Image (cartoon, rainbow over all chains, first blue to last red; front, side, top):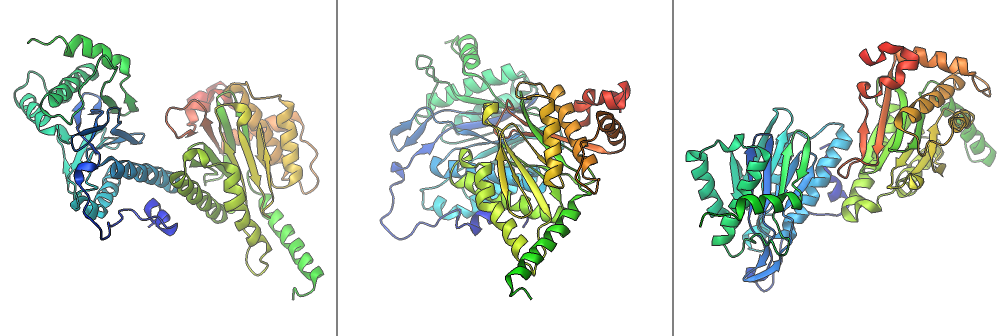
Length: 259
Length: 261
């Protein structure tokens, strides 16, 4: 198939989705997991955010992990699961999309990008079911063809679901989904019509709430200058919200809680 | 048939004459470093001649479209496999030319029972500093040449030489903005296009002839201009320029209505 980077890699001896051989079982508690990520539509496109923590069992492996990865000019992958697999998946997709655009002289369609991600997840099933390579990503992008933001989320076996307004994945996601469901249904404003600032304040509050109930979700540590990764995906491309902006919004709208 | 050495030499010579003749109708290419990155310019005859190869690398070509496609695909495959397996910063034009393109071109040229690749290419690589921009040209016989600052493709070495002289006459473009560098590049292109139509060692065309030629070309055919934009956000620096973005530059040849075209 023309423009398929995985085929080119295969010709050069690279295989995606290695099958684990016989041997003593691996304790999943020793493998790092990225935790909470979410995406939601807002007025100009899609906002994607993730906390910064990677855990292995009870251990905090790293508190400055970036789990919202740019795939191309208009799409990002937010990862929850085993970072080793997820980062490699993002690298394959990043090069696959670039290779397609450069060799076929046109952007890969949004459907084509989703298909590519599903294929990687499907080929990763042996790792996922053995408990050492499971990834449940969120794919968020701006569809130039329809002029709107799109959100898709996946289970670890590769099943694809479209998030109409929002999606969350990882250990802190139940809290976020609960709050989002409430806001979406009965909240004072339609979430998809929030502006960038209000949407950013909302995700800071959501991640703070998730950290309150889930020890694996890294909260915001003002003293350590540690804030979530927040990216805005619009028709103009991907814009990370700068840390100083997050700092200001946190001080003005998140810290000043009622109780 | 080729068992005697002089027959083989003669056959290679014939092949050179055959291939040279194929390029005379092609459109030259000019690439030059300017303040904002690298500018590549040519005149299109239906099929694009400027391509993105990798994050900081562009390819421009002259010759048969199918042969050009073979070289483009070879460069794309090596660049992406290397960039994925090692790191994007390890993908350089010199490695692409030395280890991927030149051997393929040379082998095709010397295998006398098969058709040669009728294509010559120019690869440009933008860097943080203009002084570190790299240009490599690869001829149809596998000979390649590296230069800094600027490079051109013309039908013959004499044509390329005339284009370079014209480009150098305009002065260093290292600190020039796009609206200075692009006219200089287009004038060098016109020198090449006029020179390679002559069936003799080209005398440089006069300035009047160059301006008149550009007037005709700009009115009748499509310019193809692309940048490797040093300051572009993100990893991919290649960007084709739209007609509206170069309209102001074309005013000397199309008149004040150029922007409205």
